[in-house]
Image (cartoon, rainbow, N blue to C red; front, top):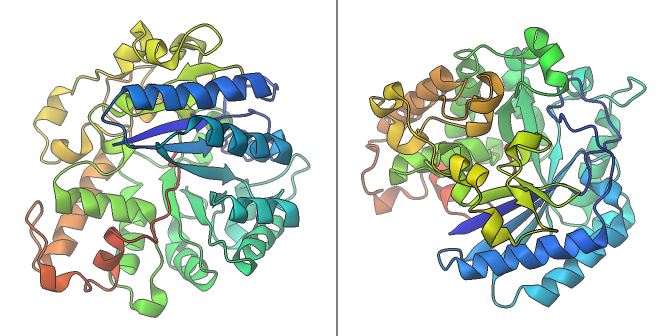
Amino acid sequence: MLFVNVIKPTHRCNLACKYCYNEDVRKPIMTLDILEKTILETFSYTKKVKEFTSIDFIWHGGEPMLAGLDFYKKVIELQNKYSGDMHYTNILQTNGTLINNKWADFLLNNKFLVSISIDGPKLYHDKNRIDKKGNGSFDRVIASIKKLHNIGLICGSALVISKANKDYVEEIYDFMVENHIPFNIIPLNKSGNAINEYNELGLMPDEYAEPWIKLYNLWFDAKKDKYIYIADFINKTKSILLGRAADCEGLSQCGNANCSTDPLGDIYPCASLSGISSLIYGNLNQQSLDKIMHSPVARKFRTRQPTYSCTHCKWQYICHGGCQARSYKFFNNDQEHKDYYCPSLYKMYEHVEKKLATKGIVAGSPFPEHMKDGLGNTIAYLNSDLAIPINNT
């Protein structure tokens, strides 16, 4: 079982994306003392809970690279010191504008997985992913991606679907294939700058399904030269094939295997909820992570109750009400509510089921051995080492 700690060395960022969800205006960068506590406690907790067999350290922000290269050299040193026989992975979620040759070599040599935020071609990316002077960031981002590719590090990416790009998914798909950029797609979360921009950019609860399904069809039916790894499609297809949730937003109790650490050592339910004072589980300067994960606030997030409509939903067993963070953000701080995008999630699962049925595959049934290399390259990737974990917050 995987444990995920989304660590935010800082909430600062060198960009000013129009739809940034970050609500924390504090500026500190994590000290090396707190960094050591974070890594030590993460390993200690996961070793104590015997079900955990591996850890994803997701370095997030703000822009996590603002902590500096020496900070991450210390990360590697501390992980070597405290990991023991626990398997772990480092994943950097970055806007991609600060990657130079030194950073690229470090990330490659230390086996970091890298996810860079990009919203497709320049025209769509630069509408919203801008710097503090209002300039688009596309040229810097694509240069960083190519720099990583040139040294053999194939990065993943996070792509936000909004009103600005939802009608151009075919063009976006072709761009990502042409540039060999595996990606995850996510909708806007209603927090931070996105609150002010939501009427202009945000999708309605049932509107997200339309571009998602168009992209899914391109991906599912793709021939070898048009196939690209898309994390959310892999996860939702795998959910239906296996009959259980395959990503954090579908887990019945995502809080059991996730937390987020902020620059001051405060622990939150997840990265999307970092900075909300009422949601602090505890602080690593005062308590162990084990005690923090059993605090009253933590227990509340780890025991989500299904809504009436969820218990009567066909897809409850793999969806469980969707993302708790989105429930909290969209429904007046009520994480018990079902996901704002629930109508779209239902349509997505229905569509995946129907697409699988076109290949003679029934949801929840054993997957036929002779078809593992079929489905236009899709199934071959479901359990592939090419899978790139990408944070979906």
